Image 1: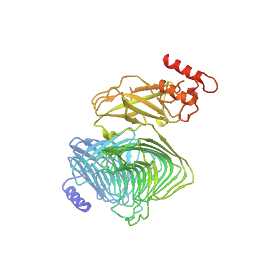
Image 2: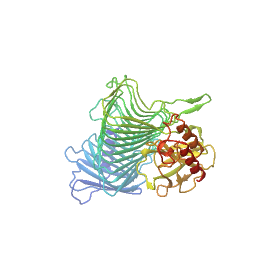
Image 3: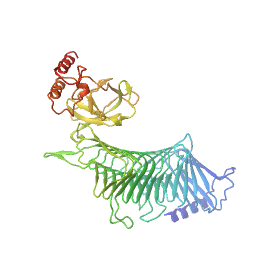
Image 4: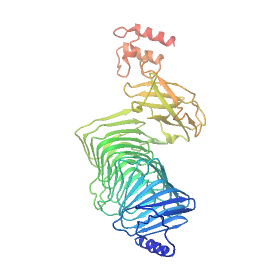
Amino acid sequence: MKKLLSAILIAICALYSCPVAAEDGDTVRIVYSGESAEIIIPQTIDQNYFMAFADGAHVLVYSNTVSEEYTYQLSGSTTNGSLTILGSYKLTLELAGVSITNPTGAAIDIECGKRIAVVLDEGTTNTFVDGANGEQKAAMYFTGHPEFEGPGVLNVTGNTKHAISAKEYLQFKKTTGTVNILSAVSDGIHCGKGKENNDNCFFQINGGIININNVGGDCIDSDDYGVMYIKGGTINGNVTAADGDGLKCDSILYMTGGELNLNVTGTEATGIKAYYEARLMGGTINIHVSGDGAKGIKGKQSSTSLTVQNGGYITLGGTTCNFYLNSNDIKDGEGVITTNTRAISADNDIVRTAGDITIYAYGDIESAYNTDATENNGGGTVTIYRAPWNFYYTDYQNDMTSFLLLKVDNVAVDDYSNYAIGAFIGNECVGVAIDDYLRIYSNDTSGTVSFKVYDYASGRQYLPETSKNVTFSVNGITGTPNDPVILSFNTWKLGDVNKDGMVNNTDATALLSIILGRDSSNYDLEAANTDGNVGFTIADLTALVNIILNQ
């Protein structure tokens, strides 16, 4: 295909003269404007080795240089255009505020097989969208190895397959700004070299913020025996596809820094999957797992690959891992079908030398942390917290959204990891939040929603006061990020013996049990000391009754 395009381009350029401007330097400027594109070529470029042609806003460039690195600066906007560059030498692609939609193919197709520096100019937003049902592999396609840098913004939509694809390695440098994968039919970011064992096949991020949403495959796939390096930056990914992965690595995944925030809702989906080994040696991982049979981190053994044998290892040596598990087990006529949602699961060994794992589990989590082989615990801790409510979103037909702000003792909460927030219609739990965003479910089209807050540290439930009434509405939204529903409570309440956030007759029963010397391990003895004296007597019960009557 490359040879054919090259021949076509040479023939076209023999018929049409290439536009030339009286400029110095080595930067070719391409300015898109609706249905046309202007190509401005410096006189210093030897046009015996360089040809360019614009058919409307579809730009073709052929560069036969083997010693001069050219820069291609893109600006302007078109809804029916593209850029194709053929050649055999490295180049720089400078994005200076450009928007290209190609309804029939790739927006960017660079086939040089070398290093491509993709520079996001400061203060610019750059957008690329490809056409649906085409033959292209991505909206932005590179046969070489792109290296992204610069503080600007990049938005990419892949309507046929991937959003961004590189045949060799793909790297985000420390200076990278924000990259938004808005959607992709398959993977958000894909790199691989056609089932070849090649040292140049890897994904690496040193900096930047990468946001990936609405993908039909994996958020990031380092394919074809590819390695993955997470050294810095932030990756925020929503894994919604069945069997999809947030980070998929055919070989070894190395994480020494940076932050991963992955929301795993797809059936049998995985936050991080490494077919050989995941070596987590630094940085922070936050994974929300709610898909049926989904996993936070999976060491997947493969015995059929040519180079990956006896894989499935996970090594934790410094990375802090926070997992939020919400079991969405499916109910049938016999009861609940266990779907095996887990934080970490390895087909081979889990080795811990350092780094802490914290798991927040909601619902019927059978085994939050599991290996089919052995665990070598050489350091770090595994802590599992469980909220006291279960709910199954598969039971419900309708849902809505609520944006929340939690205040404890009149102070807004910055770190929601210490609390779980439950939504209730009547006594039925219809949603659990692990941050300030809550999905509420119901089979009805209306109903009053109340909230409970569970404090992991004290094991106490609170019934917060709300700043506004919350009524369930199908596909509705209550509150906004700028005007949230405020849930406010004080952390301690005298007389709340059973720690359910209320002071009533059930606390009197619990206090009587304490007075009689029965098991009090689940009760709050400080709250039970209602008369302020040492020990528990009928005087405490009398004081508690007075508290109940005077509420």
